[in-house]
Image 1 (tube, rainbow, N blue to C red):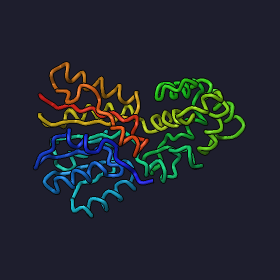
Image 2: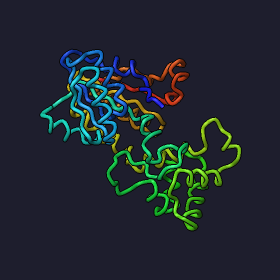
Image 3: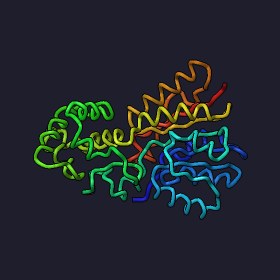
Image 4: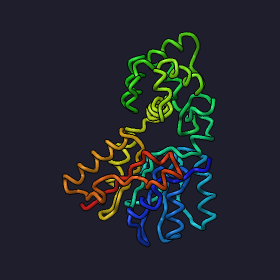
Length: 296
């Protein structure tokens, strides 16, 4: 599947870029947003981008060079943007974009177990190096209570306790190693009516595990805090989230900045994809874009 960038035009338009702006793309992914900036501004806007996936960096380098743009593409987590920018000699930026969605490339071609559609090792790690924690470690070693808390806290999975109990029972028989192993465990734990729902019954469990493995909520909090410090007055931060846990964090951070008169909300309510975009890219249906401008 070819990755389709969500809310592409809306997010770049709201960042209000101008000639001479420095644009930081913290979640490079398929390079959709950075490619749009490149196409619209050429080298008149400096592009600095990070991603934890080496494949994303390599693909983006090729994509941007074909359009004719130079960019600083760094293998790193956006939560380390302060170090990244310091190493480049950049003190402040004019625009920050965080697209918290997982690219179709990672979902479909990583071989790391992000999708329940393919039978793959159950890793769910964004980076290719050996992270200390992956999905196998969590499922085979962590307590039933902790697993249940992860499933409920990071995805509002209503059957979190039943799934966690089934996980612990299954691992006593044999280690849980693949995506299909986990799908069958979830299937055994949830009611038949839940299995026939519009959303696949394994979706929330896979989402919650991915967030836990990659420490995504802490990364988001760190990224927003550091990003705000590194943003020029008059600069804007745009964040696209895909589930309620992320969106709550973004909404809370932005509202606090607005309440303290440090920032101005560009859109009071989140911008969501058009019906046409959802038809063309069903994965965009849960996306929410929030944008804030730094005023002091």
